[in-house]
Image 1 (tube, protein in one colour):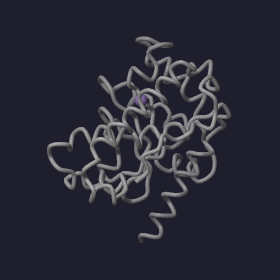
Image 2 (cartoon, rainbow, N blue to C red):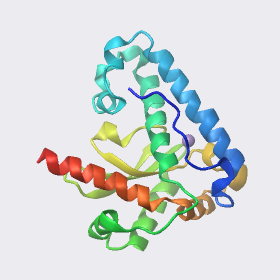
Image 3 (tube, helix red, strand yellow):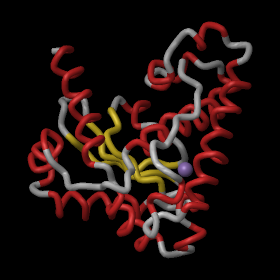
Image 4 (spheres, rainbow, N blue to C red):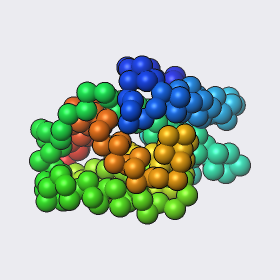
Length: 209
Ligand code: MN3
């Protein structure tokens, strides 16, 4: 089980002006680190769980004792969701390409239609949560909107790209203007990594069949 805070691979200020450096630092060194610290505490006396991966546990959350299940769900989801997030952002954004572009076209028609639907999912999330681009059980892409730190893995999906719409992700720069944050966020999506994640899941799916 990996309970390390991942490195960003870029400076906190590297995504400016789209995402400000103070927000990135608080988000990574503050929030993400806190999820990991709490997860370590929760798992301190849970030897059988520590032998599993977080993905395995989240795909069958009932293996977690009921008294810590909700907090585990929040913190494990928080750790995995943010670990994916940092690597799918970059100052060298690029455009959708390769296998993930083909899959976006197959599921949504074209990139603009996908981006509109994804932004709607992010806007319609009332309160805190994420919009997700995921691979479903038949290896097609779908958009989900999930509350809090719930991981798509809990629903049998494989997350390819996630947009964090908790206020901690944008409030300093954008305050109540979530649509402006969403517009800006597209400018720093690292499509090269998104494509790698998608291809990895595609290979796993083709091995499973
Ligand atoms: Mn967050």
